[in-house]
Image (cartoon, rainbow, N blue to C red; front, side):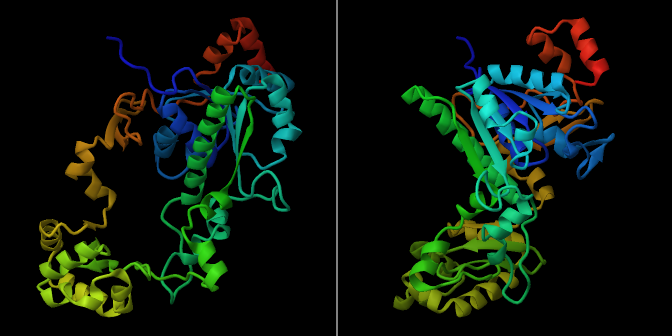
Length: 399
């Protein structure tokens, strides 16, 4: 029996993006079989190549973010470079871009121009504020989207200024919405025989869409959700605690039956059976008392003792994992969430496994982020350019 292809095999994606949001969206498509052609400037390429920790001059993040992609260098300020992009667009199913709105139009690569070349094209456009509205043409990164979208305001402790999460979560959330939108646009073409369309993702809206009951609670009750540290008022008890050996453990015991099990594990059957604590509203009314009791219980034990007691009582709990914890964790290992690749010099390197896990047609890593322009000749040849034409394009500075 022939091995099943990845689910997006045969799909062609053109990436006109840099750094995080656009490239992350294209990365996901590539992990599940799409052919992703990444257009980079011949002058250094995507700045992500030089971000964070470098190994032998190249970012380790780059090798992850650009796995399964083909790197093609094209000068978008050169007429012949633009012609190559349009030729690639004619064969593409999806274009992913995260330029500031208006930039591609000035280059002759806006939606109207590209859809004229390929009426079936789906164009995923990721930007700070979307393609319309008074702020559309302003620059906006993930940090701005997280701030405007409401996430930063509710993150942190009430006696301190707002804080960010430890990653560029706004960009990543936007990328996920972009992929979802692309899949829906392709499904529309399949079901309705429709033309292509624009998937317009604003970073602030991508974050805003994740903000749970923030909007109706304000509209109905005038309630403004504030920073509450590691707890969430109204959902009790769920918090992070410090153990005797100075480790940190998260415990989520906000289910009615789970709460009772935790109290019994703590030696407090009186609280397990207390009528006013049987439901969440009653527990939330006594949350400070409960958090104090749980905190004291945790503080008297080591991390391993706390986790063992929680596991025995079937109470959701976890250490707060560092990456070092992940590398030795049996769950990460069993789920193959740390896959091994080889860097260009042959050194082995662990990277995150592909998510989500499909039972029949899983995604995977075919190769890590390529060298700048590594696939330029190959891709141009597939478009019909012969070796001499490619040489002239290089001499002219078009590629």
